[in-house]
Length: 384
View 1 (cartoon, rainbow, N blue to C red):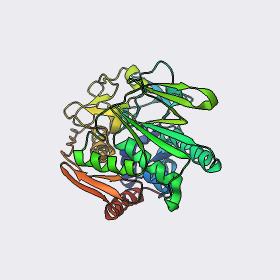
View 2 (view 1 turned 180 degrees about the vertical axis):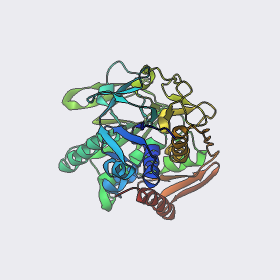
View 3 (view 1 turned 30 degrees about the vertical axis):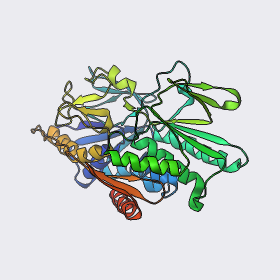
View 4 (view 1 turned 90 degrees about the horizontal axis):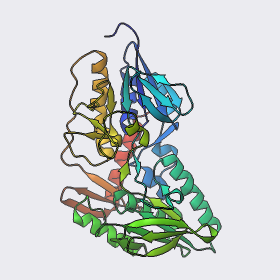
């Protein structure tokens, strides 16, 4: 063990870091100072976020309080945004605070939706991340629609993966409320560049979801790549596709492919072409061995993993062990991702789809109860 106090700095309060800090609270490191830098005091749990939009969970039920967690872990909490790294001198550069020095750094900041390649209009879209900004827009949208029942609204979601379809289904339920009556003044449009929805899943999942969306009156635009969003009269937006299709909407949400924060690639740490941090099996940067990364912001050089919270949660124990081991100058452990995993996909109506590999079960209430139990149990581990 080091004879003097060393400093571990965590950037981001994602799933992996939240679990690691919780474990450090249960088994603290001696002579190690912990600092967590994150822009928000609350961090969302992605598994329950669609349920919050649908109205099944309150804000506090699906958010981890990082102040409580930091107190439990014995960590200092700096509420600030990171804008860069000084890797020559081992400093984290913040938007408002003085540079923060570190001996060991861990990065878990997730990802953001890839911006549309447009000449005009990306500033008019609403990304699902950062979640805090997205939720403010969602609350305002709800209030606007509920307070203007005589006005028609059109909502567009760009992206036909799991995140996009869950968002549409959750929004429908969140606007309808418990009555589940169709809103005559709201129409939904889902744009997807592929030929079928949810292409990363077994084909039956996409078929179940497509039938469900159509039954709820969602307008599906498959094989339509959005290329431009233009602001027109009365704050309405024109969504233009490469095919020439143009639709007028009031809100446009992006749930597209994930991308990395620009400061990561600019920092000098090794990344792939998309700006995600390259890590080895120990979740250790391939270019800077005193830096670790996990969750969506990390790309393992030996595995081709999708950006999924499932892996972020599983990486936490390896990251926790390796932070302890690097402090003791011990060999690091390897993380071996599971080859297949169960996905429980909420359908916004108190049901869920279960899928693992080619095994798929259609929407059912019992599957939602199963998902709800798993998610609530996950949140119960954190200080309340």
